[in-house]
Length: 266
Ligand code: SAH
Image 1 (cartoon, rainbow, N blue to C red):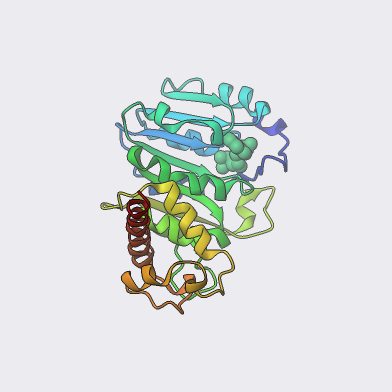
Image 2: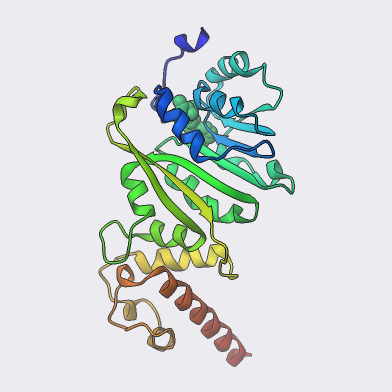
């Protein structure tokens, strides 16, 4: 088979999943149904893609950046009429276009060099997302489920937990990949929350990121004390001590404060 001739490349973060049992578990976590539109990030040589296709979803759109995988994917998966290969960079693809008014499930054994960027983009697609199942570095997965007051609790924790219910599904040792990565991996399952704040996501992202910069600094050095007090947050506290709910409340107060000063200026 052509797949055998494929040489993995570091620059694309290629670590192929070679254990059928892990591949099956990932696809189990996706609860594939016949109505599902599935987007896969980085199909590589298509092991995960094929297992998804075997479960007969309505369509699979696999987005792959490495041209050397295209003939392998086409040969391996051309028998599936519901398979669509998108040749390009996932970060440049507009998922709203693929979704075309439908909801999608996004899956991927993510290239670790761009995993964080991909994750941080997900809240912007909330309206069309049904579910995400991602293989990540264990360290990143731990951030996604981290609670306040821990070292793992970062910007990523707060930003993603604001929009998703996140479940750490399993750890995956390096030996299940070819070539094995230097770190342990983990699979997470992210479901859009039922109720999410209505403020603009980009502004909130910048706000959370600003509060986590120099994370040991007290919040009163970063944001107006009156706003902190209105949100019921001690001015001496630090970003890492606030819950996700605190962040949401604080940003709402911050926006309200901003509009007030707008009015005063007018
Ligand atoms: N899904 C395969 C391969 C995972 S490795 C498996 O599990 O075996 C990560 C894959 O993502 C590689 O195929 C790599 O070429 C691809 N990739 C890396 N950066 C990408 C990007 N920006 N957009 C799309 N695919 C990317």
